[in-house]
Length: 237
Length: 103
Image 1 (cartoon, each protein chain N blue to C red):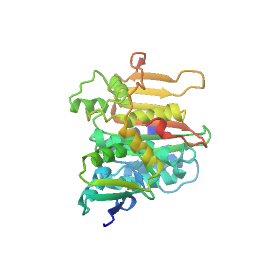
Image 2 (spheres, each protein chain N blue to C red):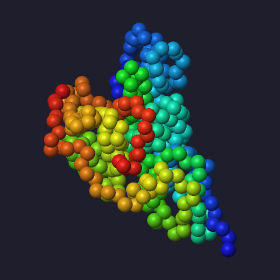
Image 3 (cartoon, one colour):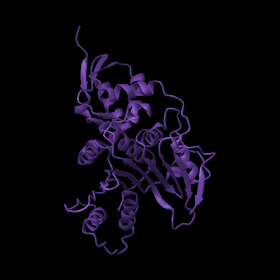
Image 4 (cartoon, rainbow over the protein chains, first blue to last red):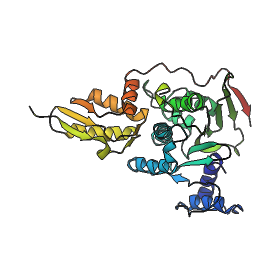
């Protein structure tokens, strides 16, 4: 089960305490249990289900947590290198602390040896992108537009110097690493995928109109194909 | 003439520089250093986000101290150059052409 699905699920289970039936897969069951109970995973053989990392409330402990996380993923040696991986995670997580006003936030990555890619996601239960913009006096019509404007560099912090983090991450993932980015926030979602050479990259938006589908927070997920070559993040920063 | 005091980034923060608030913390240390000049030693730093670099750059501009960087890795140097000369924010998402599906 990929981080994109798992992290909002874990947050829902933890928040609502609704009874749940564990999946047959022991490793996946342990992964979900550990995340819901906020404890370290017991090591388990089988597919590479990694731990859902709860981000610390205090930003001062964050760098160490992210370093431990990255070390478990071999410092991104197959995903563009350490600098790219820490830049990617760092900017995604930074946005959580800076904008979300969340109570809980999580980070997870899952390496897929069959699909030859890694999926990495950050989830928070905060005010959503539109909510963050509204708090700073920027009224955006809907959640899809809020996500698009955030990806284009609009920041709730207002000054012209801000807003480059998410934008540079999206560019690096899609144009640099030829991967894909999915951002879901409240009632909106945008997916931006690299396509094969010679064809335009694909951008699609989704309105999650029914309350059943609305996300109580923001999820930013990237999928990056394995690659030996490092990426020069400065081309996208 | 005395040498300027040296502040070691990796000791105060970490080898991965991520948060704006961390750059602010670094400058709180820098501002408390006696004297008018400070050397900021980036030895051992392995990665940097643009957010950190931007906050560092803005704090350095506002500081009354003469701040000089030493042992700066490429990752920090190039990001400081990028934030010193921020480019135009070209559109990443083409909002006009974005196809929206109602779920």
